[in-house]
Image 1 (cartoon, rainbow, N blue to C red):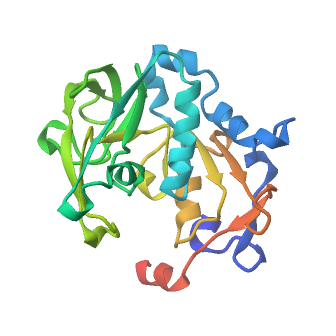
Image 2: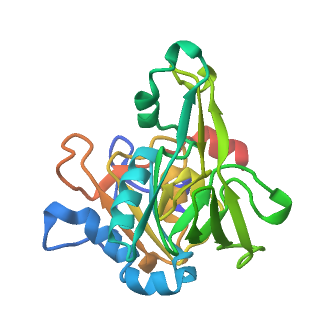
Length: 268
């Protein structure tokens, strides 16, 4: 609660000291991210055999850039043969018709990547509302059990519809200039992305068995650190990796805790 209401003692500015019990330890300081991944997912072979046990575990971080970085590392470690599924990208303006290679490199929140690399029984998150009445809403976590060129076979992994067999089609998704996209285009792809890691904001309202927290950069909005550290059921189920804000090659035991007293006062 001290973190949530802003009463945790600060050591400089908004920075607070994180107790050692929460911090990742490793004999190899050059690969602490792998140590965090191992703390959260200690045996990926077991999880592949029973992927539902993954549901209560996740790595939380601040931005989609770091989410993608972590997901890419974990799917590389995940057992099984990979399946690469490519999108079809088309500019909406004829004058950009020769820019397809550029479009393939573009990535935006809520948009699936051009290259989607999946493995049997891996975890993904749905990025669009496909059938809310049937459990297929934006943010639904799924277990993929079969891949086809135009259809994914999945099971809903969490919540009221847990275990329901569903099919996810490739669909066209448009990016307009309003979405900070210099070249408006349409991407036809499965509306999913890997979900071994997710943003802290996306995790709000969830209760986890184990939470890893990766802070290459500090949190940047009100209550974000509290949200991250309150997802797990107890303190023993949290591990953190915090990098120094000035020298990003070093780790630290201090990080920002942004709390606006005006918001706390308004809510109380």
